[in-house]
Image 1 (tube, rainbow, N blue to C red):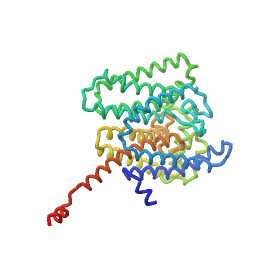
Image 2 (cartoon, rainbow, N blue to C red):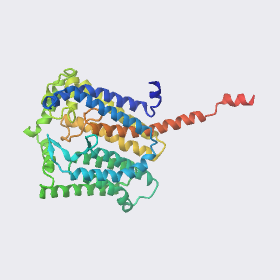
Image 3 (cartoon, helix red, strand yellow):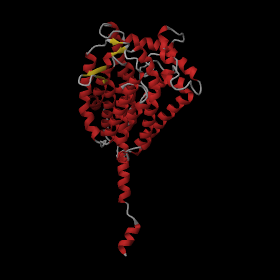
Length: 399
């Protein structure tokens, strides 16, 4: 056991936060899975518990393996993987958009050998942020021309976004926002960013118009987005507000201390209670204290991400940490905001808490990259300490 811990490098606080989130997730996932077990064929809640354990175990294995890779290698890997994720996204969107039990299957591809589904947009998001961080670090000390950045920077960004948009608007919006934030932090001129934002808005409007003109090409997707926004802005409760109303009912009944682990009655009424709306179940069972506990953990993670970024020895390292780290916290805040109706329903999961393999694995991949950067800083610090000259050694040699 001691040998295993000696192999763990990087920021110990981030390791602790990820572990606490993973451990805490088991009880609410096991409780919320009762809804799925009752309507499933097996009726066995424990099978969902085991599945979540397997997903987390594989996720932490990914995190451990990635954090052992020197982060400078991610520069080259991002260039190799960008074409790969574009092909995966194209395959995903071409396979159709048939809905199965309310889930849009055009977001996933099936892995034949292991018979598992994989959400390609989450992998594309991580790879794209690494790619953008690489390019920004490359042009950091150069005079930036907008025309010169179109092909190497913005074409890959917009290709990824265009391929994700038809099936998942919320993920597209989050990735676009994070790219804008990273380019701003990376020193990309604001006047050029306004052009990109304008181009993004125009592209979205054109997509909506085309989807409206040819509804058979992308059935129900634009209507779903617009109905969610209209329901959010409309003060009156309708049948379309069923999920969010059940979510608010769960939060209201939780109070300060909650009803206790496994005692949520709303989990049987709330669709996606183990994924998209698990935060509502957590507050119902663990109260305001449970919700604040999660908020503190994600805030602590944000703080450590900023610290690791600032202590990085290279520009690429600093941008890389922010590029893959900020979306984790941003997604968590969006999930919480949706549960309390501060934001329209998006379908974003709660990182390391919600059930779902792809979300957990890609979050662990991103955290592993952050730990790789912090491990390098720790290696440099240890090297500097060993290279320091001890005055007593000099004195002994003189004598």
